Image: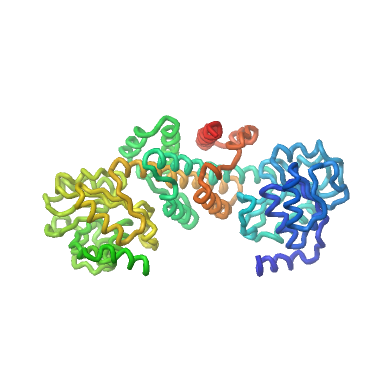
Length: 274
Length: 274
């Protein structure tokens, strides 16, 4: 963080740390809660997790007084409730928690902000667009954070929190966040699955694994993010090389062949648009 | 290169530079020919390209005496003919060139080595598995090179050339090279196309572009290449979150929806195997 975190902190200097209850102690919470605490924009007073050990691991990191696995015992006088649980649990929160005048925000890309309307009039979303894994350090300053609030005041407070830890903060309503999430599913989840298939082919056919392709993968990503993915498309489909595509398909089992054909046709369509 | 190139060169110290004719002056040739020349394992005597300016650009880089756009004028007394043209041209080479006793090798992942059998008894393949772009520096030492030769002597010579510029050299017959190429199509060409789709969704729906996902893309690749892609799969499909998948599909135009469904089903199948 260092110099850049300092710059962000100046812009929120007027804000005193919000007394905050943390609900959830998983991958996302274990990154954003320590960052927000260090930036002195929140002061965690309690951490809940279904698994007490996870709650305790997080309170240990941030010096919060209370870790609990019993959601009914959480303080009701916090200013902010930050919910960072699996989507299914996030959706059930309104059935579990009493009405409140605090700000309630969750960190999910897929759950509407309105989910918390039955708890509080001041609700919002604090969605970091990154694949965060517990125990893997991530430079939060580079993680895009998407903010939504029920009203300008709530939005403003959540924006300040986000700006205290990241230099890439965007305001985004639930509809926009959903579209971002769809884009991320294509760009990350589906590409990762294609790497799984490539890894499987390399094992099956060559006794190798994905690591042999690592220089190629890095260079492909570098080109896509510098000159853009349209311009950096290579391979038999964009060349319209039907002989190679047919040969490849003839060697693949059905599931992989179906993916090969649909993706190649999609590239051919892209090519015909150029 | 430096220290590592020096180490490689010692292992091939016994070999004097082969008098070499370069056929093709494109992306691949403009990377491997200067590297091989610098490592003193080849001495280029002429460069052919359909486009004279490209041939001249390459001779300028390596101090070769002759650049030509007329393939009939190439010297017939070289020891090595290195063919690095588009696949279609590579396949036509046997119709264009006279019989020879030299080694003929091409750099294609998809063209069988046997293609050159009608020119010479000593043929082979020198296939660098990387997306090489003219004008973009690439650390050749990290580029995997796959070698095939018509006989042990030819294989040995091509292996020595490859080891002089890369520390990742593999022997691979045409069948194995084809399988590697299929894996690379999934891992690079298809993933790049998914980035194109994500970029299009971000433009269309959010006025953003792929760069907003760059931290996420880098982290996704880093995780896939460290813990493996199976272990790092995330997203609605691997969670079996049908509500999110249906919502996403309802918002996508037909072509994108079809890809979303097929890729999600493929991930679900993977999940059921776990």
